[in-house]
Image (cartoon, rainbow, N blue to C red; front, side, top):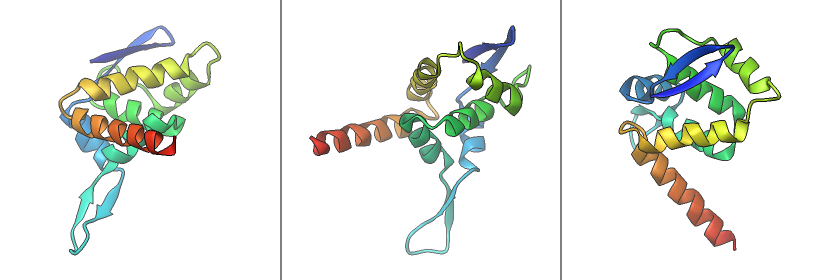
Length: 124
């Protein structure tokens, strides 16, 4: 469980199965060769975090805090990101570290990180 202190309040963030179900709802993709669709929000959210997308970072934090008490608001997360003393790069690293360790997210996260490394190697 990850914790952040925002405005002197400690908030908890869980990257487990509840998070996976919640974040997956954000993107639906069609499966080739069928009329079936699959939720794939985790892949897009993790890719966004790897790329340094602040909106994806906030969406991930918001989903990870769902069901936790106290519940952080979208506005509090936005304000936290906007504060000059918030180390956003360290926050990206912290979230990515939890995504790499949690059973519900580690395979997708590690696979995406490997793809990024392969792409970087091919550019050289």
